[in-house]
Amino acid sequence: MASSQNSNIETQTSADQLLVAHIKQDYDNILKLDSLRPSKQVNSLFSHLVSLCIPPSTIDINSLSPEEQEMRKRLIDLSGRAEALLELEFASLLIKMHQPLNNLNLFPYYGNYLKLADMENTILAENGVLKPKKVAFVGSGPMPLTSLVMATHHLKSSHFDNYDIDEVANGVARQIVSSDDDLEKRMKFVTCDIMEVKEKLSEYDCIFLAALVGMSKEEKVKIIEHIKKYMKEGGVLLVRSADGARAFLYPVIDEKDLVGFQLLSIFHPKRCNQLGYACT
Image 1: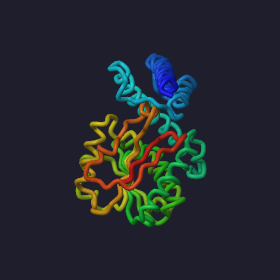
Image 2: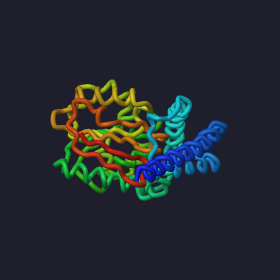
Image 3: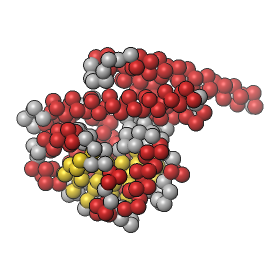
Image 4: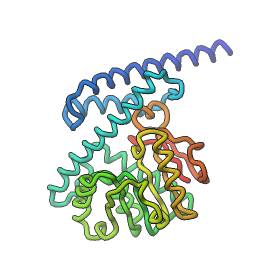
């Protein structure tokens, strides 16, 4: 029995090492790119990277070597920048269409957002948050898909304040929403650093924190602590995190990082682009 267990451990370790080697190949090729703007080469490289990182794995990021930790840190940054450029390109395309909201499915990962919104709505409902009056989404970007899907499919009477530090992203997002009178009334886009928002946070029944707000654990923990300081008693914070090899794409937040919160639910989707949730 012991021999069999040791063999399994060795196999898992070998598999993890091979996966990290494949991730490093993609990383090295990404570093050679002239630009992270969407192109056939960029899309191919990041699609392959995602295909490597999304399946469940036994990788423990705490056991990575210093060089691998540095690679992971830079990959999160590169992936975040590439994702922002991809969203901006598709959002800029949508605002040229007569009915942009009818064409959200053109975005490559739209299906993932539908699944994520459904999961998050289930988490909220299971914890008694059925019709929140006001919702904040931190890190909404040029294509605020979570807010849009939530507002149109689940939280149909809620008001959404979308926060992003990029006014260009907010400007494009406003144009997408302006094509629908109801959504335009229920959605605002605020350009600022969430660390500058204080008393206003107490107005929200529910706050969503995007996976790439805070590109490192340290940054993200500071943001969570700030939100905790000002959000209303009984309010709910949904934090997007990652596990396994997905940690090469997104920062990881553990239960111990949520000091002062009552943990209500943790959910790990099997195959989605943004993964792992703590609802507190």
